[in-house]
Length: 376
Ligand code: HCA
Ligand code: CU
Image: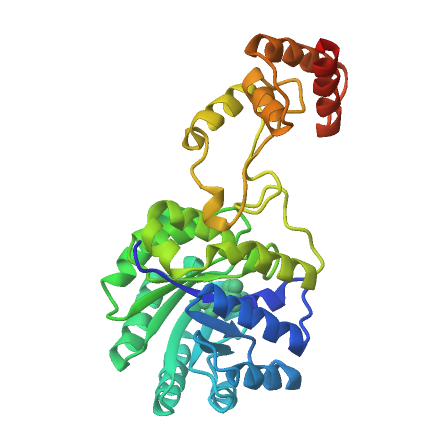
């Protein structure tokens, strides 16, 4: 899983999110933030999608970012001819290979798919650009058809081949198997794209990397078609556990929160309460038993260190599950002096009140302060 790369698709897949509308300025702001974070590639909406999409693509190419700029097109010469003129570093080509897409979407057979793939690939390469060929709905495609088309494109030479779980049906074991099989057939890098309809998008991405894939498509907060794809932040959470040195040295992890807020605001959603890393309670510890151990050694109940992301942990002490260690730590923060026995007494008082109503920090602080002044 070491040395994986990110294809950041907030400005392509993410634009397919129900709420998304990005002005040119917003796209540029997002592209710069992603570049600063350290993503390897930024994927943009097809220039044939609309006039403004093409202009925005050209504008982003002119920014001179470190990340390579890609655009994403159908496997068609009409699209390819426009794409190569935008100034992008590479082109991601996709075509549906499953029975569903062949029948209900583009209506082409495998021979036609293979022929147009070769034509488009040769053309993009002749312009000196990177090329990726991907099948849409890979997990519901015939495996023989799939391997044949990948063999064909790998033989003529592509930078990457991609597999896409377009409908979010795959599970981690299926992903592992398909990537393994594909790896034996192609000689280029493998990229993977996972939708999150059944909640497997991060797990599938990890499984793909374990099986030897090199690149994962992500978007900020996972925004995309329907409920979206593998989220950038969530994948970072998974990968910092698996490859801590690589992840910490390559990506500016302390920027995740700002980037998520930027995109959340742009598409008018809240960051989910249970989001990995940035959910409001992601580093909040509540039960007395947890709080005690966290105060002694945070690793007891934390696999991620909030400091790696420029964040802080919180001990939630204003509730009936609290314990005297958590209250002791609060007493110290308030600069008050109580003996351990006194702290145990006031903790009992807090728990008693917490049994009849919800408490907040101010409530607890005033109970402690009152208790303290009664002692004087
Ligand atoms: C779609 C296309 C795609 C493409 C993925 C890829 C998918 O919007 O349907 O190019 O790797 O999920 O199949 O996003
Ligand atoms: Cu997709």
